Image (tube, rainbow, N blue to C red):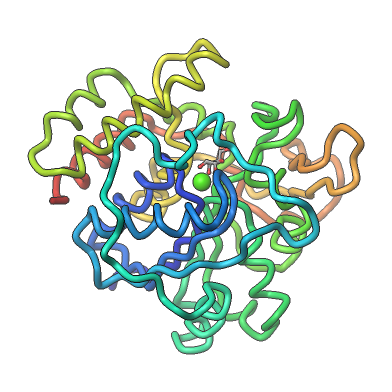
Length: 312
Ligand code: RIB
Ligand code: CA
């Protein structure tokens, strides 16, 4: 039985690879893709989401636009990382796939009320605004969510948008705080593990050599995306942050972590957006997330290669 998921996303080259992996994998049924403001404004992330779904030849998957700004703060974007379109690296044609008229938050609520309780996994790979807004508007759906598998946060690896905070959490810390306090089981992919999911030159060239259009697109996206981390960290390879969520759903044994308490700082002068992860269990606070800290990098990239090769 395929796992039913809703992807909430701010494409983003790494978001694009995550979406393609999900659409290529029979273990996953994507009920819908909901765009959120994050890497670039919503007007761009919703177009990018439609381009990616169309590239995969999956026009059966509906794409929605969700919230265009955080719950309580001005939007912070990351064009310096993802380029002005948010999906720089390859020029894709304007999407023919229409944007759904329904607001993405309403779609999340309706889907969770329609599907069997405990059967839908939410996969947010951008700021958590849409998830928190759905929980605010319809508290009855919270108990119906099977699990949240998210990319966000950092602890030992510290922040990427500030010294203390990872981007997805930093953009909407109030939303993250409400999601982490919701009681829904959470699997968290922080920078601690996603910075280990680095592409290699051989892997990128293998993508470029794939027949069809998706492999070469992934190669172009990761080439563009890599330059930022190379300049900043001196690392070689692009960190495939968001695909770690989908890879966990397909092969959780590739990942290692610990159930711990994670709180979100919303009032810090220097630490707003920090995920305060009680890895050593010193706080006495109840665990609320599986904090993933390591992965089998080669196993993950073997999975990516095998699945992305299935796409057109
Ligand atoms: O900090 C990495 C996260 O921020 C990823 O989800 C990337 O796509 C950006 O949204
Ligand atoms: Ca993202």
